[in-house]
Image 1: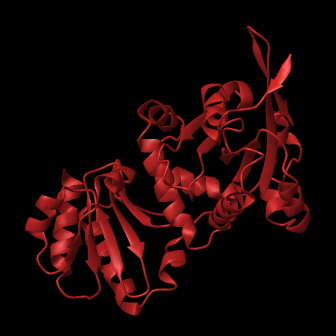
Image 2 (image 1 turned 60 degrees about the horizontal axis):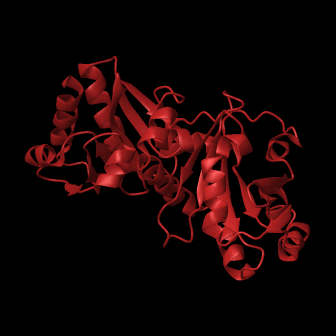
Length: 315
């Protein structure tokens, strides 16, 4: 058999997407980014449930060995920044949610595996385990090896190069993989990472006294009506739940934003004194509900917020 070059990066990507369980194992799900113009999101995101208690996320980037290294460097550096938790991380997770929502079949498979968590919450949890970047090429580039040797704490730890080669005769094509991808996941057994438990203080320590007071007044009023509701602190928000999520409290220093799981038109009829922000359909999907955001930056007129949330709780 003779080696045949891949005609395009897309050919290489489609080979992996169509055969991902053969490459990565049966306990994986793959989500393909079909927005060709989005260079700063991975071509594919892989979720690995081999360890069901500690699922891992892998960002997969495809490249041909003859393509310019500059774009590859820019993309991977961007992904490393998101993994390491700078201000790009939340935007990265939102974009990932959007891609998952676009694939109905794979999304439904994922929802059966993550219990009562929403997709954004699950992805946020996987970031604790530090996703890795699998760089799949048709041949090794010396630039990649140099980056791994030079930047050992970023490229060296997070980027895992994989080379796929194609060999053909008149009737058959076979593919070789180096290293075997399953070895990428098992070469180094890392210490088990404790799941981080977030608290209200994690959100409230950095906000103004006004925001703290707004939150506790709303919380106290709602618990006095129904003490079975729960306020669950997560990394990016505190969720209000009763059987399902009702609202999400997001904190900034001087502003409390509440994503309310209630149709915007109905919400606007009940809220007169606070700003309401519309959410595009893709963002509403992240919260798994018709919803909008209420922005609160003062103590006045909290009664209408509380009455709205009471109405949603009783639905």
